[in-house]
Image (cartoon, rainbow, N blue to C red):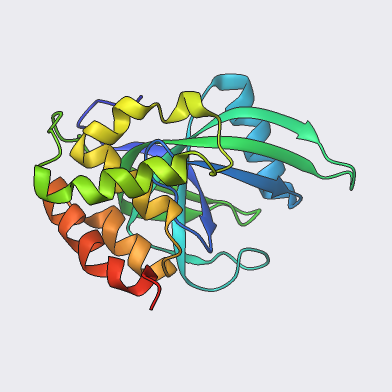
Length: 200
C-alpha cells in the first residue's frame, strides 16, 4: 500500500464506474495498452489506478479521468470463454491525480498523491439503520465475504464505502461520496438518499 507522502507514478484505467476502498470489480481486458498494464502489474505487484471517466469512452482515445480515484490491486485473473482476459481487482487506498501524461500507446500515466484513510470511528447510533441495510445487502452482494467482514460495518468510513458501492446510485453520486473526506458526512449524505429506495 503506498504510504510515502511524495508523488508516485501509476498507470490509470479510466472506467464508467467508481471503485471504493474495500470494494471489488470484475474487469474484461482486451485493449493492448491495458493488457500490457495488467501484465506489468501482475509481474511487479504494482497497483494501478481506477478513476471515473468524466469525458470520453472506456475504449479508443484516452478518456478524461476524475481527479480522485482508488488504487486497484489484482486479486485474480483468468481467460474467459470469449478468449478475453478477466481480472478481479480490489480497491485499496484513495489518491488524487496531480499530473498526467499519455504514453505512445494511449495508456495514461499519472503522478498521484495517496490519501491517508481516517482513523477507526464507531458508527453513531443515529446511523444504525445504515448498518442494518448494509447487513442485508451483505447477504446478497456478489463479493467474497473476506473482503468485507461484518466488523467493517461497525466502522463509519468502511460502512459508507460499502453502501456507496452497493446501493443503486448514479456514477456522479458515487464519485461525490468517494471524494468526501469526512466519514460521518458521507453517512449523512447516504441517509438523505434512503427515501429514494423506500417502497410506497
